Length: 215
Image 1 (cartoon, rainbow, N blue to C red):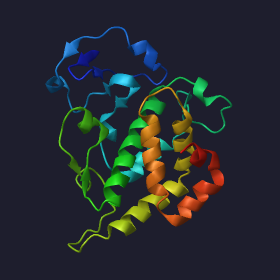
Image 2: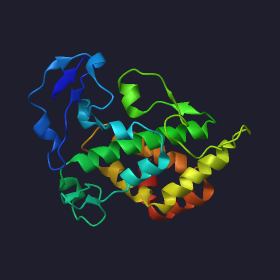
Image 3: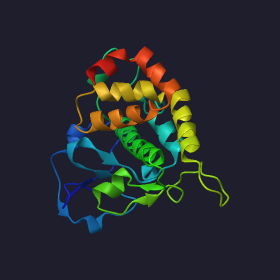
Image 4: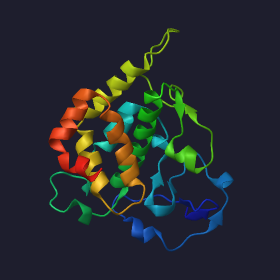
């Protein structure tokens, strides 16, 4: 199904080996009410939304963000440290899934840093839907009892997961990629949030001094 909705969305099934540019020609108009919860949506500026990533499950988002390749199809992430010219790789499904994971993970961190229990996923924000409760949207690191939530400890836990997964390397590569607008801002949002933890700030300072100079 190929459609440009009233909010300039495109419904499509994006093949792992198909580039974004090939999806820009044949479209029809619908309203956002026609968008099903299981539809894959292409928004303006090259952003896609996948139904399984409409979540705040930090483990799933990190797994998606740090996936380098899909072996059966040999699809490769454009943000792969082993590639000499990663920007030359097309933005296939693996890359667009990483973008949505980056956005929602950044939204999660922003909410936790502010002591909040809800925020907008990328999909819901684009479709004008209300903010979602983190727990109801898949986040499973809050305590299961009725005790008050130590937001800083939970925030630290997620940041440590990000650090251990090497996601910062990928986010930094996304930050340097000029192809899709808003990527720089969401990369910056995530990097800014994780560096509020002193130990992580020192790591970023040592490994990505050029990034800090650009700020």
